[in-house]
Amino acid sequence: MQLPIGITRGTSNYGLEYLDIEHPKARARIFLQGAQVTEFQATNQPALLWLSPEEDFRPGKAIRGGIPICWPWFGAHGSDTAAPAHGFARTSVWKLDNVINNDDGVFLTLSLPMPDRPDWPYSASLTLAVSVSDYLGLALTTRNTGSDELVLTQALHTYFNIVDIEQVRITGLAGSRYDDQLLGAAGKGLACSESQLSIAGEVDRIVYPRQPLGLNAPAYQLDIATQGSASAVIWNPWLEKSSRLSNFPTDGYKSMVCVETANCGADVAVIGVGASHTLQVEYRQLNTGKN
Ligand SMILES: O=P(O)(O)OC[C@H]1O[C@H](O)[C@H](O)[C@@H](O)[C@@H]1O
Image (cartoon, rainbow, N blue to C red; front, side, top):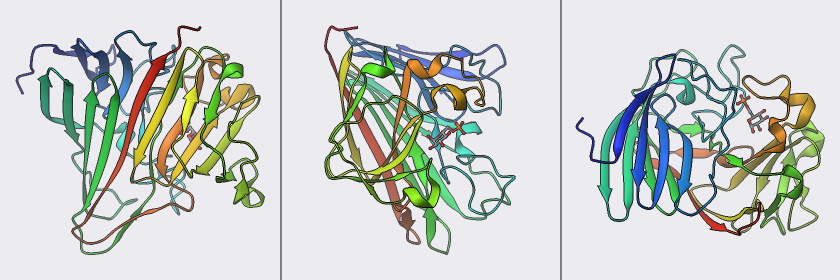
């Protein structure tokens, strides 16, 4: 495909292809493996996404940072322990279908050539629309092309770049329930006791928000506007768990937090025959001038 001015192709040392996007409103990088946005910076805003400094971008290995797409299951596969965590979309190579560059921004559409897999014997199509503008937008659409109802869990597993985890607040939690994944069955359906969450240790929660969530970083304030999602995952591995993660530096937990737009936990996506479901998020930042 002939790319418009402002979009260039590149290749990592180990051969992963990416697209670099330059526009007066923002710049971004998107890898074709996983359709993974790894960098986004709106003009006059701090860089939005955390990307591991230890990431070496190898074929077939999940990229640590940016926005991994967890699909068609979130976390462990329901029954097959050999199946990859968070599904196969993040380690598969996607196809670029369309790019538009206009005064409003750069708008891309990618699709996943569907593999034939024993751990997922269904029929579906999957596309991702990415909007690179003064906001970053992602819309992940699954169409059920099979003859049975399709039930899936999924997430846009965004790693946010933050200066200092101790100063971060996740806002909009008032009245929400959550499953604390660190407590297993005992942690289901807990009530958020405060409207804001600060992080001082490992956090792994599936939240069922009652209003839009936000992030006070504090170098920027972020509005997270979602559609097609009734769950969000808040995750920071802290020190001990991070030593067990691939491509994750020892002090990495201090400069990242994940707030993931999801269908997971009690919020599963049920897609009828011939129907489709879109999981969507838009991130809008306000530079606070603090660092
Ligand atoms: O290491 P990964 O497979 O990328 O998973 C990273 C993390 O993803 C989600 O946030 C889960 O809730 C965590 O339990 C998991 O550790």
